[in-house]
Image (cartoon, rainbow, N blue to C red; front, side, top):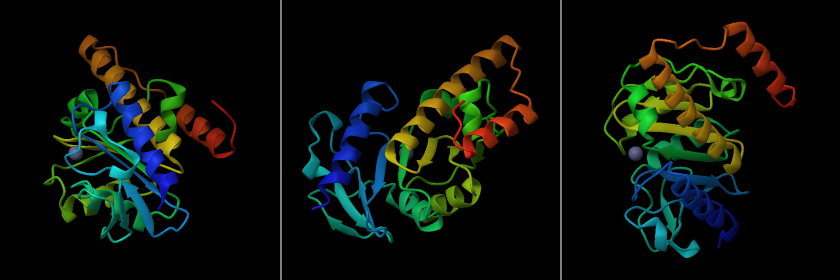
Length: 211
Ligand SMILES: [Zn+2]
């Protein structure tokens, strides 16, 4: 059952691996089903290279394992807590991206350097909390508030979206933003987009005008 959302999870995790957003079995992806209470999520400890649609786990909104041969991701609490808190969120991507992890160490908000990045900013940092814990899930929900992305200190990033394409785009732009930010700070030239420009861009995106 739930082939469609399982396939979306598998396609996304393979794509994330192909473009270097995740390595090994790190990172995880979830997609909410038509039934709001059903979520497809990557299983724990299955190598992505050999993963098949039937390996993807199904959990309910409380994180209880409903279907699939392997245990759902150890980060399931984070994925389900965000979906419980935000009915607009239908997909999540969590990565241990190198540049996101570097920038999360500063504890400072990540700011945009180009227009497409402005959609997700400011990106706040969740203080270090044990991976897989309910506390981490709680901290992600409160730091995320009504935004789409948070950085996780000494861990990586957590991105949300109205669909899986949306959540993947947030992950790609966040990693890019973190890389640009790190190199420009090293050069001493970092200069974020001005706040009024960011507000204008966000208003355009809200009105469905492309940036
Ligand atoms: Zn993780």
